[in-house]
Amino acid sequence: MSWMKKSALLASITSVALVGAACGNNEEGGAAEGGDALSGKVVMDGSSTVFPIMEAVAEEYSAEQPEVEVTVGVSGTGGGFKRFVTGETDFSNASREIKEEEAAEAEKNGVEFTQLSVALDGLSLVVNPANDWAQDITIEELNKMWTDTNIKTWKDVRSDWPDEEISFFAPGKDSGTYDFFDEKVLNETDIRQDAQLSEDDNVLVTGVAGTEGAIGFFGFAYYLENKDTLRALNVEGVEPTHDTINDLSYPLSREIYTYVNNASLKDKEQVADFARFMNENAADLSEEVGYVKMEQGRYDENMKMIDEIAGE
Image 1 (cartoon, rainbow, N blue to C red):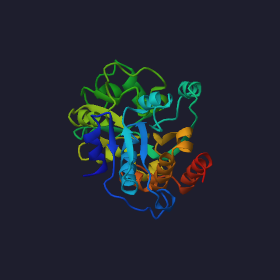
Image 2: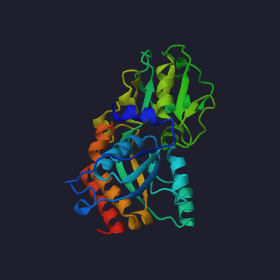
Image 3: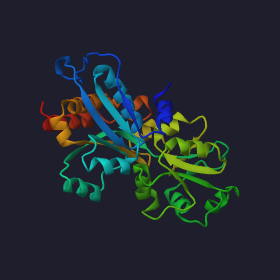
Image 4: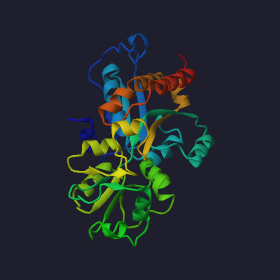
């Protein structure tokens, strides 16, 4: 079963505890130095976009440190930060950068943190495969579609498109993907009220796949996993692909992150060990689940920050 299809099975629950059944040694140094066995908990929550990567990392880590319980929540970027800024979690996965008000709340609560870049993603606009008219769309047209309730059919967007009613499917407002779309497309204008919102990307996939005139958006990996039932639109003439996301030529390319609580990193050996393991394996595992790895230098920067806080 693929990582993404496992994610679909887990999306209806608050979190998943991933505990391994066998012990091993990490020859690349991701597990505790000298192969020491660790125990305790690592708690993370946040973005459904980042979830497939962290699910994969957690399962790989459980083979190295089976006595460490890694819990991966999927409450959305905003929901994850609500827990993180109070010190409830060790990591907060995010498909956007932390907001000023969230950082201020963390400071108020004495929570210091470090942002770690995990991979690259391309927010993908998807339609039903029966839609054979729309191949490319502009940011201006997307803004008009998603904010103007007078737009009811595809013909209202472009005169040579058919008089087919549009149904809209979008991530919920706790999602970092929604925030990114809000910034890049909506220009912080309210999304139309008839859009169907869900924090569960699999609900959006089902909605678009089952509605001929539908349009929706979510992370690139969810499109790849479901490209047999969905079709991605080019944006400003650029197709979302591994290469266009990697070179950032796709207009809706973005970095995705995890934030780590500095106190957890410093005081909990299992958290520091997991952070190092995650950073060493995120590139390969992000590719495996459909995202795009960053240049190695970015992961080297992450490791330097981890080592400075946790101690080498």
